[in-house]
Image (tube, rainbow, N blue to C red; front, side, top):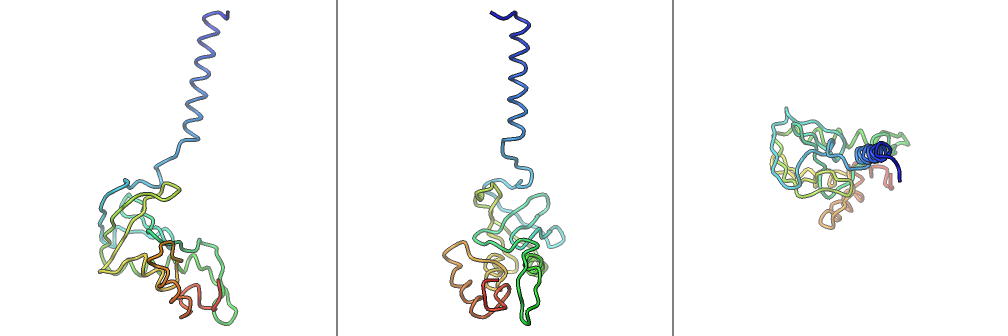
Length: 165
């Protein structure tokens, strides 16, 4: 049987190892602060576009529900064989939408990475629908698939070159 000092040292070491493991393994809510269910509203001056599918509304980060926009540094071709950063173009398109006026979002859960998902609107326009309709995001919900097909056939946004950019 080990001495009491050795037993205390072993228990202390295990407790410390468990604490360190918890810090590095447990999911963090830091980048995804919005609760699972709430309503957020803010004027355009209190908004920031993070990418083509993500907004910062005050201190809260919200991912637009039902869509996936290209990430920054995603290259796609536009007419004439010229390429552009479609991730930046998608973020710019979302920024143009949010400049229209105040944003209202209803948070209704989290995605597989724990990020809050929201249905967000400005001036009566759904941001998710507008991004898909304008060709700057692909549909992840069945209700948006027809809009994506229309954007593809019309050659809008990332579909300007007629292909799967």
